[in-house]
Image (cartoon, rainbow, N blue to C red; front, side, top):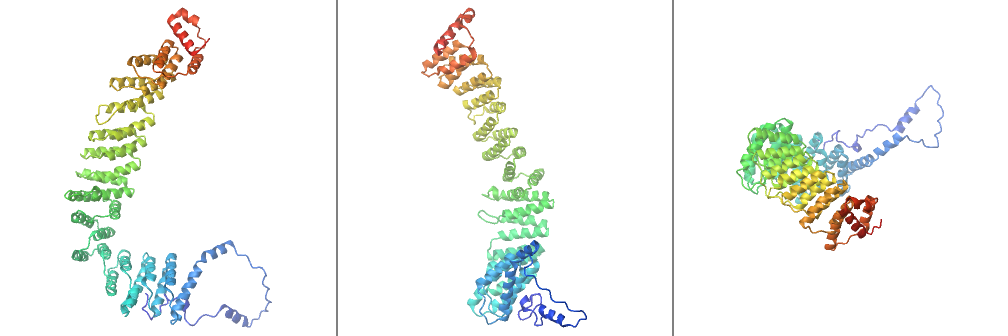
Length: 615
């Protein structure tokens, strides 16, 4: 126990104020021992070595570690000596005291700090401002019940001096402010759990002229709920109504107190009452901290069923209230807390339990789980949850579908993306373009032309999706790139059948694919079709057709391409096609060709004359 001022306590007496009878010094002890008569002859004293003995690394390390403690010990001894042995000396400057208490708090030295305050009380001087010593000491002792109990006695004595001070100005400086009083009261309520200490602090606050506020009543609500004093809870409830204070902190602290005591049956009524008393624009809603505490405690004690019942009953009340956002609902708060705590499976179990009880809950309860699934790349689980949402008659917005489909494509979970897009279409959402482009782009980047073709086929009749020629071109190009030329040709035929007009890019992709596989006859068929349609040619298309037909030996068709180039005034680099001829048909003789096909011979001669080939 810390004694009142004027009495000395051995436990709190600083080292500098030891009793007057001190033990003999080491030198006196050596003198006394040396003066005794001894039967043994005395040896001459050995001379001390001139060189200092080198200390070991362990000893040097120990010195370095204890070095910071020495200045604090000397400062503590000097401060206590100055306070107790020199009562008429000038007072220690408050900045110096503040720095010293802050250093003690940083070092975690609670006992010296409390002893120094005791010395300040015993010396009979005016106490410095409470902010100098009180605030550091509160933070230092709050986590240690024993040290905080000792601080409470010091706090009580200091407040008595404030009451006894006759000068209002001096008393105002010494008086603790409301924040400090609330911190002390919080320690009594939350750390010590002592009703007597909490009430004594309230009496002290009243004596020094500090009025309690919402935070003060919140601390008391926590304590009364923790200790199960329901009569005090009712009295506090009535007092808050009389004062017109908000009950947000009151309900929050009641929930925390009941959870700490394990009284889960009292938690749900408090939350439901808070929901009932909440009005539009009111702040009686709970914060993330409270929801996290509720979720953690109920899950830890395997009370998923009770938690589901709480959400269902709260949702029924919330349906009767106007203009309440999804994020303010109890269901969203608890489920989101489970997700933030890493209890994603428990959150899904909570939804399953609500579904098993036949409850129809709001869409907001699902949204946080869907976001978590996207964040953790659990796209298959997300797609399953979306199916459950649709089965409950709820509809996600287009933005949620877009995010889920994007996450599925990023994880290469194409089947989940298709399922989500199908649900999106069945939900009759008007905006499908973003998700459609996401799927098509992802399939293109991953060289999945077969999936592209089947996906495009499934949505081609949907008027909400604007399918254009470039969508088909992407599929044809992807098929040609991987050598699936028959699928590319089939896609081209499907495109034409559905009356999508091919363009130059369509033909270029097909030509390049045929040339890579040396299927020049397919290029010949394509040229015939394109020429018959009257397509408007550009340089790239003329170049591709001419090169492929020369490589294939179809010189009559090559000359038709040259005529088209002249018609559209397109420049042709003859050297390129001369090289192609020499690579493929260098040994081809006109005389031999004349005997077999006179028409081909004429086309060959015409091409060689055009290209300037003399062989």
